[in-house]
Image (cartoon, chains in turn green, brown):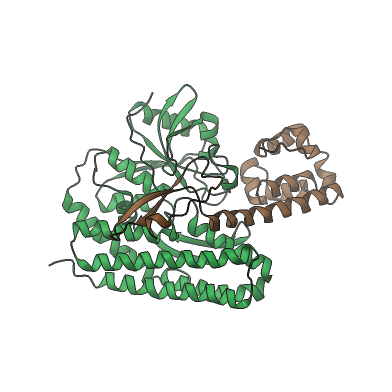
Length: 338
Length: 135
């Protein structure tokens, strides 16, 4: 059994699944940057008291699941979402969906994800893919970060749907309910909602660790890593930062380029010159993130490693924080009615 | 990032699939380009794995010296902490802590060993002898 489902590769798994599932129900104008922007996906947070793989917990995007939920909500599309207590019921439900012709988004862990290279298989449980059919014992998988659709046996799919650890997916399955026609006016409104939400998330979350303040905070912390952790461990911390920033699914530059692409697409709907200018600011920010990553690589490769090098990475982050602050402040001043 | 600056350094992922990157064309318009990987990213991943290999080597020594059971070796190798092992096997954390002692581990029943063996993708006898197949 195979549902007619179009696999389009994307940079990021969740915005890709969102786009592909929405297109499947007829929202033809949905693109990956639009899904990312409407879902207010851009973020930064550094949680100093949590460790992931013995390194710092840093994220460049919003919590898993939110991009899909927000995008659907802003467009007035209702979402079906269900978690399961045991594998048999989860698989039976998935089969029901497929028999009804409903492709299903699934949250999975990558640790047992057989088609990923071993080097990438950490205990990361917030990957997303779409199941769109079954042939013999193989489920047909549209994993948006892969160029081509792929397959998993029922044992393998069960294992990744019930991966354990932080953010355990518990078989989570979701899809947008079909049957609503989305007007251009709704998309326009959703773009504004998404931008406003993102302004709030980057500028106005209280406390020092999230949004623009979080970038500044991380920049200051990095300067102390060498003394506090020793050169070796500090290098591993920087490697972790770079991995979160450039890992599969960011589109490069810690999602900053994808947000730049979103603002250019927003320009098609709202032809205000500011949007183009602000998009350019995010391009510059993405470039700066990558420059900081190159410096960091020098440290974990052991080529450089003086305190001055750490200072210089920290300063890069402080500049990025200022640049992104200006970008979001400028965004917040746009007059949408004219 | 300009479209022609998107890095193309072959990574382990690049052999299986290329990744979508967002980049700008000569007019500053965003478009996408496929990338085989980026050296900075590859070495970040290498650094993480080197650290894991170091820990596995330490664990192997500890098991050989009788300071820990083979469980420790497989946990380090599988990037697992006690919490994750508990979630996968259904054992309590305190049980797993006990099983890390060689004296307790050696007395484990075949059934219990099987629960560990499954999550580490080995057989119970391989679990005991610390045998691994590199895939």
